[in-house]
Image 1 (tube, rainbow, N blue to C red):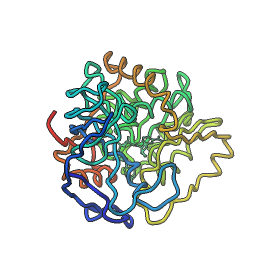
Image 2: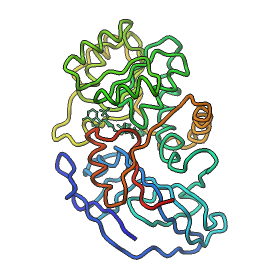
Image 3: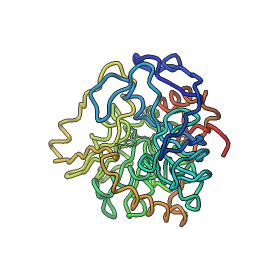
Length: 331
Ligand code: NDP
């Protein structure tokens, strides 16, 4: 069993030296347990704040801890009748080639619903995040203007496509012309703006003549402040993530407080892990949209567990293009 562990708390930008790759015995299942051989590991931005010794909604990691993460794989040994050998499951297995599951810590993946890797994003956690934050919290109405940051990513891509299904005018923000072209042409957003373009603020103003009714916020920092300057009266913000700040040495303060007050904006912060009961319905509806061709997605797959630290760092600097996965073993 190969594992990736946190060697030390990173200082600022995470580096490959902050991880250790170790070999240990393949776990032996106890009564009611099964062993999973991981096929795909999900890399997610939330893992970076977990590496800092901060107060949060989950305990932070300590040096030597296995890196946490959702994975999908195949049961290869089982002492649990409801988890037969050969079944495909997903659970929080961590960054390792083999892990232990019980019926309470994994779910069997419906292999008819799509490729099994999709259980780690569009038909899993990030899909549920998009659905919940947009439809339960921000509640866009037809004709309203919805802005989505990190629009080509796992969460953002689904948010914008659901907003379009609901009849909203949808504007993405993404890093670079290639991602913006994909967001407009493949995902069908009305507009996508490159936050690295020198005239980004002017482009944002031109794209939002009627201002912004809903902001689905994934990145925080200066991009968030820029959108606040275009916020409409009674706008709703789904506060989902703050990825631009996860490696920051100094916390970035919101400079646009004035806009929140003057325009009587409601901001809804949420963590999808609090809403487990919501996932199955959301995933079923998104699955239907995927089958109908109304929701598309893209994967960025790094080969081999040893590449996980590098791929993780690249995702946190915007070099991923689509949902970041690691192919741990061929399925
Ligand atoms: P993505 O697939 O969107 O990948 C991360 C993207 O963030 C990058 O591709 C990059 O996009 C953008 N990014 C990274 N660094 C910066 C930066 N310094 N400035 C601006 N953009 C940056 O990841 P996910 O879809 O998995 O996650 C998106 C957000 O949703 C994250 O903030 C995550 O923490 C949050 N999240 C929250 C959940 C919740 O329950 N609240 C659940 C799941 C995710 P680009 O190149 O376009 O800038």
